[in-house]
Structures are given as structure tokens and as C-alpha cells.
Image 1: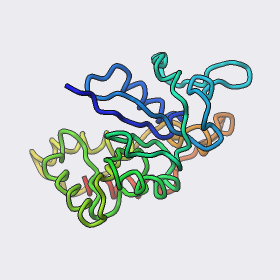
Image 2: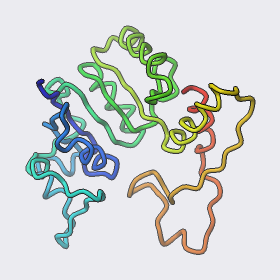
Image 3: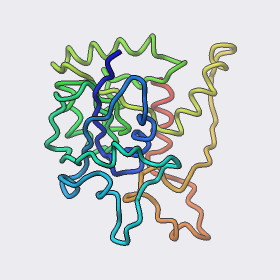
Length: 222
């Protein structure tokens, strides 16, 4: 079987590196393009993830695959998505709203961003829960927007655990009301926009803006 060529956008960030770790040696996919911000473009990936001290800024437990380290980084805004079969995008929502429709004109886009999660023709797909019922929305999305591809966002990480836990209860007994408490890491926002570790010492932040709304809206949609 021919492997599908894929691009990873946001490849230098924490979520992008998780994509790369999952795609290393994958039987279906071959990473043929890496993209990030313009300031990293043109450098080999292995060089771009080294800081001035020479330490590697790699956040996964697995070592990066050697073939990834040699790939040149491209400017995400200039990436020709038509060269690949699929794009995995791990960028912040503001950038995602601009870039992902451009990629989706040519190929499918799987995204970690919230930019398109709440639009009526965009499913939030979760294996084991709603794939058969919700994936047909992708064809509507293509027709409505005139794209060859589509945008398929992943759920908020807190939503995933809640939805998977609720599904058997919903099927077996039904649900009228859900009260949920989450205990999370300091931030799911990556290295730049998240809570700084030293700022959290001896502090308690019980409320994260928009997090409750995301979990409630996404769980109901799923």
C-alpha cells in the first residue's frame, strides 16, 4: 500500500511534536513536509529545535526520527498543501482560522485548534462515539465551502475524557444533567501563551476563561 504523504504544520511546538512522534514509522503515512513560523523557515528541523546552548527543544519521551531532523522547515503561510495528501495542523486558533481554509482547498486538514470546532458543518469526531453519524458532515462542508479537502478539528483535551466516560452511561441509562470537575495541567496552550510554571507556585487558579464553555459546548456537539 502506498503511504500517504503528509505535512505537519506547527512542527516545532509541543502539539506538533506529538504529531511527529505518532507519525514516526507509521504504516499509512509518510511525513514529507514540515512547516512553522516564517522565522524558522529554511532551516533543517533538527537545527530549528535547538536552543542557543545546543540543547534540543524536543518535548516527547521518544527521540525524534532521524528523517524528520533532516527535513527543511517551510513557512506555514507559504506551504503548498497540494504537494501532500493530508495536513496535520497544530497552530494557535488565530493562525488556524487563516491557514487551515487555504490548505483545505486542496487536501483534508486535521487540526488541534478550536477555530472551526463550533461551526455547523464541522464535526468534532471522536472514535468510538460518533464517527458514523458525524463524518458525513465533511461532505456537506466540502460542498458548502467549495473545498477539495475539509477541516476536521480534534476536541478539547478535557472534553475527550468526559465524552468517552459519558457515552456508555448515555447509552445505558440516559443523561439529564452532568456535573464535572477537571484537574488539569497548568496549561494546554503550549509553551508561549500558557501559564508560566514559576507564576503558579503557591497559587491556585480555579478558573480558566472559556474552558468551561468549550467543554459544555463540545460535549453536547459530540
